[in-house]
Length: 319
Image (cartoon, rainbow, N blue to C red):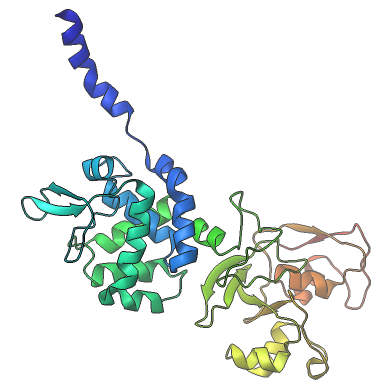
């Protein structure tokens, strides 16, 4: 009898030990979420945030017993297995899956095939806030705070990094990959500066990525693009565009693949990098474009005169 009582006394502890944390949930399902992003164009950050919220990070009865991680109900036309539980109403019908991966796949298909969610796919794939608000507006959940709950989880657990990994912009160790995956979402070009401190901040309707370097918006050029063409494409006045990119003879030049092209003016200093060690053949202009700092400010900070050559190994202040 004592052993039996001890068994029942320890049961809650055993069940509690089986619970997984949100961090463990993310590590378990991030690869599936990223695969679904590539195939169905749904942000991995949104998928993971919904999974955490809807399934209690995989600990809800619906997730454990029915492998349903997104709270998707049976709805008309569902022919698979079902699971009954109380929700908004008593004894509601929910979809039941063989495993969690099947639930993630059905979640993608559910959003893709229902007209009320169609507007979501007109949003930029990196706009997680727009997706969160769009899901609430389309009626995915009745909780009035649903959008903010998703946004809070995305920002708390830094889930947008999985969007960047899925897009081929970085690897799991926060570095840009050496080889871009063959995927229609990926439009990567490399340059000597592309591994410095570039952050993906936006994407145009034609799937061209916009970054920020030192708070200055920029893109990577494609082979053969001209200053005039890029200024027009991004709605920047040609004279200002040439000034932003320190172009001396813009009418005679073309960009090469991976060249950094700025869409707004350079800064007076760089808050992420303190100093730079001059490499062979580098000029002040090269360094200015690398760190998005005005060349005149670099000269002033380092007490250099314009036109003076800098030497390999020389250390220059950036702030």
